[in-house]
Image (cartoon, rainbow, N blue to C red; front, side):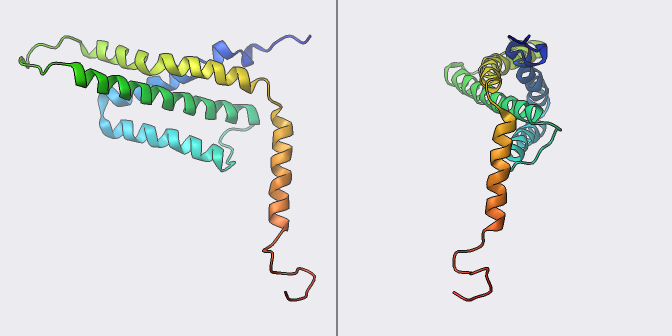
Length: 163
C-alpha cells in the first residue's frame, strides 16, 4: 500500500476553509462592501469551476479551491442564520454606551461561527475528493467537449447537401 501524501490529508486541507473564512471575517467586521466583494469573489470561484476555467494549474488544486468556496458558503449561510436567530431573541439595547462584546470578541465569534461548519464540510469533501480519479474525469469531459464541437445543428447536413 503506497504511503499517503501529507498534502492530501483531509484534516490538514480542511483548514483551507477556515483560513479563507478568516478573510471573510475581516470583511464582515470592517465593511459591508468588502463582505459583498468577498461573496462575489467566492461566487466567481464557483462560476470558474462550473465553466471549466482553470484558475490554478492542475486538477487537484482547482477541485480543492472549489471545495473551499463551497465550504465557505456554508459557513457564511450558517453565520447569517446565527445572526438572524440572535436578532430575533436579543432584547433591544437601552444603553448605547455599554458593549457586552469587544470588537476582538466579535471578530473571534464571527470567525468561529463561520469557520467551524466550513471545516467539517471541507474535511468531508476532501476525503471524497481523494477517492476520485480526476484525470479520468478530465479525459471524459474533454471527449464530450470534442463531440459537442464536432456536431452541428440537426438540420444541417455537413456533407454538402441541404436538409
